[in-house]
Length: 247
Image 1 (cartoon, helix red, strand yellow):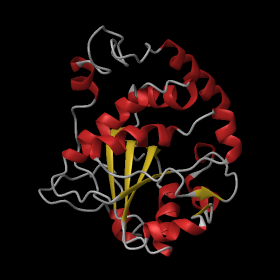
Image 2: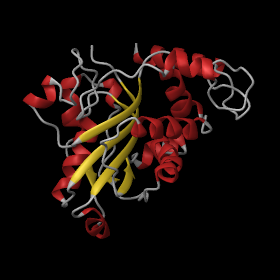
Image 3: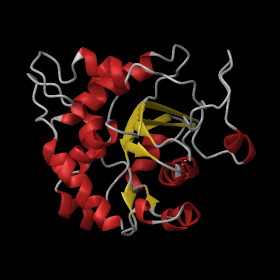
Image 4: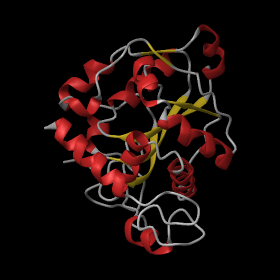
């Protein structure tokens, strides 16, 4: 079933318009922006109130920033999460086009939308250092690039925060989180990340932002935050393009 889903997704990816500066990445209409005003208004203008810690949409909107029930019951290791969009159609196909369709021209668009999401949070404390979710050597060799790093480079420039692209390393190849039930995702990521010997001094006492393309259960980002805090990070914030809505 998973392989059939991936084949279907790749079929849709091939049908997406080319993400070039003179055409909209979603509808293909000619213009001067990577995303036309109509598509932006239709798919990216709704900004639900989200849990300040995990960015899951809150069932009941309030006037004060708050946390969802899951984060109150079992607080994750990270302190905050900023997302630009929900991982839902048609935005999900843009993510798949970048990750599996080699559409690297989409990365600056994602970074631009993530910057806008940050600017919508007036009380947001900007991190002093950015890092990315690393890929394992085998997956990096197969894909040829790390989509999180491709997003992080233009994002770091847009928000004027230094990027440490090799701050984190994977200790082993992990199974794809999408292939696992939620209960097994934490075990899959347990102790999957380390900091090189020289990196401890970079994070000690600092606020680190972790860039990724998609957040689903948060197990990967939680493990990374726990690793950083064991090395003395004062605060960890996730900066993610798309958040999978809760079921």
